[in-house]
Image (tube, rainbow, N blue to C red; front, side):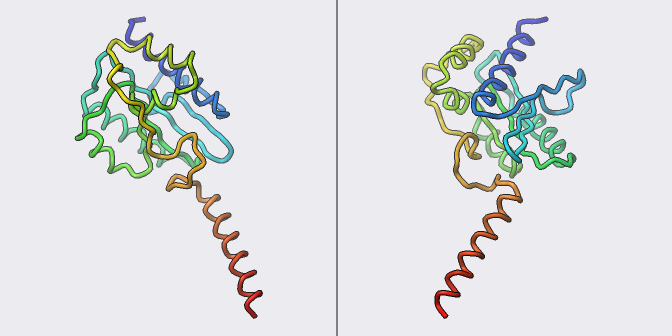
Amino acid sequence: MSNTKSNAFQLENIVADMFNYRGYNVSFNNDSRDYGYDLEASYGIETYFIEVKYSKTETIPGYIIYEAAQKLVTLSDLTDKDNIPVLVVAANLSLNTWKRLDEFERLIVIDISNLIYMLEGLVELKSQLLALLEYSVADLLPVEPKGGLFTNELNHYISEVSKVDTLIESLKQWNLNMNNCV
């Protein structure tokens, strides 16, 4: 196995461990064919399809990331599961690549600065990540990723069931307020 393939596999394990640590049930897509995602992580009613991209260099060409995102989102849309596609990239993305990825509304993208942010407090996993990288991240500032992973924020990724529950609760409160006004 080449060093790059070995590092890519190790990165998948780091990402899986990061989700496991946060309480997600994680399984590897062990099919020898690449169906567009490497990991499936679930927590409650949410399921994430996670594609992990490793790079020996600080950047990955935008077309590679775009194609991976397109494949991941298409797969996500074709499944019966209520799922959210997540693309994890162990490199910096150009501004142009970020703009192109905006067309995929449900896609959560995690680049190297987001990954470093998400590994804060997980010293062993962060050390493993830094040991894999063949470039320096000393100048990178950790940045919280968009999409609300590992937070309690309400965002547009909330499942439809949660939206319905919120609406029902709002209607109950409205009904109570109306009854109190009479």
